[in-house]
Image 1 (tube, rainbow, N blue to C red):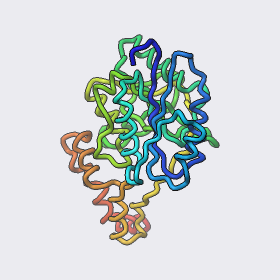
Image 2: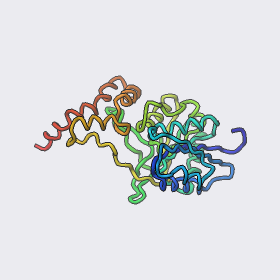
Image 3: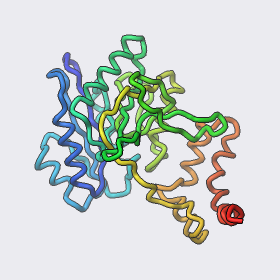
Image 4: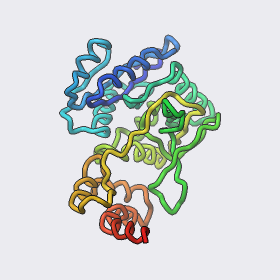
Length: 291
């Protein structure tokens, strides 16, 4: 991108929630932006059977729709969208979940936040937007920090306090990544099919000298997704729990190993194995607590 405009690639992935996807795009294209800000949407439709692609192209023909076969999940879909956008050297890359409904000034606020950081000599910064529940107003996604050094793979959200706050990594719902960071960190790691890829990206960025910041206020709404794979349910037979834990939406063994080895320190293997140990001892512990 050689002109003076600010070009932003919007990276999205979807699967069988047409109305939410259309609603997200509507909010995106209603953004109040300076004329020099140009948006280009890269949307991966991962095997939807509800005519999402057709509806998107009918309403928003400028969106680049990339077809998946249903096996990509969040990590694969976002990685494919990111790879397509990286070919064009945008000024910024914005991860956006299709269930996140942006406020009218959200994208402009993210850009202003990054400019503020750049003015402080922190241009290699990722800016995460915070989302709130549309009914309760509670924080659902945003920047996160470790609550304890004893649990290096556990994170909690940072509550908004009216200021830009530095964090350790971020949820992938609404994340602004400048060109400098994208060139340094690259794409999402292909090892992560569905979960952990966003946190891993932020942690890798910090390892490379970048910083992660969370916006002062909310950029939009997003209902927190319930765990769809309840692998810790101690009322389930062990074989069923083993199947669920290795589902892409669970905690697949190899993905957990890579994530733990990369981010949990010298005793990473203990944190790697902890969830799987619970598969076997969980029912016994539950019985003991009832006594």
